[in-house]
Image (spheres, rainbow, N blue to C red):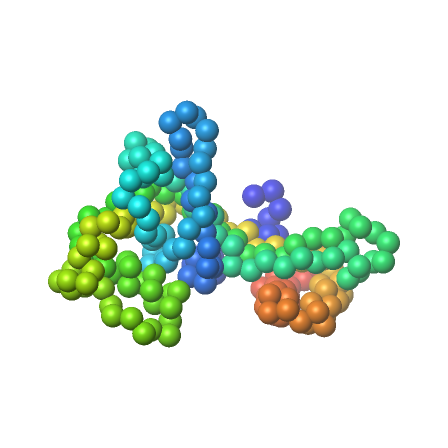
Length: 207
C-alpha cells in the first residue's frame, strides 16, 4: 500500500471490520474476461460466508474459477473541506475503515453446515430473535435448504485500509474530530472516536 499510514496489518482490527460491516462486495472472474462484482449480506467466522441462489452467473463463474476478492467497509463519513478551511477545496476527504480479502470460494453441501451459516446470518442481521433456528431435521426448512446455496470464502490474504485523518497534524485531526461531533450523525461520532484512537496507536510527529 502506497500510503503506509493508512495500512492496517493487525488481524484483530481487520476482523472487527469483517464482523461489523453490514454489506460486502465479492468480485470474481467472468467467462468473457470481464470481472464481475456483486453486493451481498455476509457473516464472518474466519471465513467470509453468504447465501444465494444455487444457480446463476455468480455460481457458474465461481465453479469454474473459485478465486475471489471480497471487500467490506464498516465506517464511512464525508469530511468537508470547510472543517479546516473556508477556501481550500483540496482538504475534502472521506473517513473509512475497509478490508480486502483474497481467497478461494467453496460451495457448502452438508445440510448441518449450511444451517450453521444461515443461523450466523440470522444472528447478525436479526439479533432480536423471534424466529426458529434452522436445523436439517426441521420440516419447515427442508425445502429452503435445498433451494439455497451457501458459500464460504477462505482468506489467503487480508489487507486493511483505515483512513482516519492520520496524515493530518494532531491539531487538525482533533479539530476534524470536534467538527464531526458537532455534526453529530452516528457515523460521525464513530469516526471521531476512531480518529482520536489513532493518536495512541501512532504517536509522534504528524502531518
